[in-house]
Amino acid sequence: MMYVLDFYSIDLKYVRSLSKADDKVMYISPQIGKEIRPFVGVVVLMNGKKYCIPLTSPKDKFKSRKSQVDFIKIYDEKCKNSDGCPKLIGILNINNMIPVDSSVVTKFDLKLHGNDAVPVKKRKELMQNQLRWCRKNSVTIQNRANKVYRLVTQLPEKNRNLTRRCCDFKKLEKILDKYLESGRN
Image: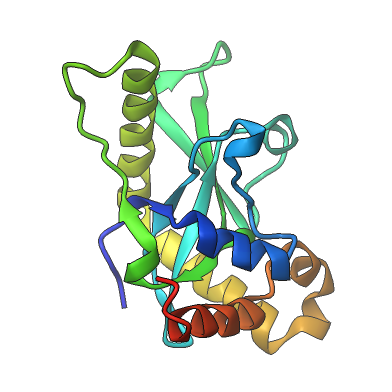
């Protein structure tokens, strides 16, 4: 099942509960100066759960690597590097996708407002470009997310390296269920 892709921020308490159980969950903390991290959501239903795939900025470790099954590079075709290639503007970390419920996600406001500060405006413009790319490539994102989920949950022994890089999806699904049952949402 396919959903319209949008960027979401995830409830901080919920992310903390996931990161306590699995250190591969991308942790967000105002104490270390990070704002709430946007996630690309909701791509697919897997095992009856909605999943959000975290978006991250391009890091040096990704620049020389080809996209793999567990991460996808996002390019801006309109903006070229000095070598004439499209500029890398983001990464989707499928290996770090987390199960979510509508009660723990908030759609990220990407509309430009007249009172936006210059850094906020630039960030929103970047995210609009990233979102456009994601929507254009939604089938690829959906297929990769399902493949990673299937390989890690059904064939972990045959995919040890991939499994080591990925969140424990089944464990996180149980935490989501407990979180929803406890009424913390």
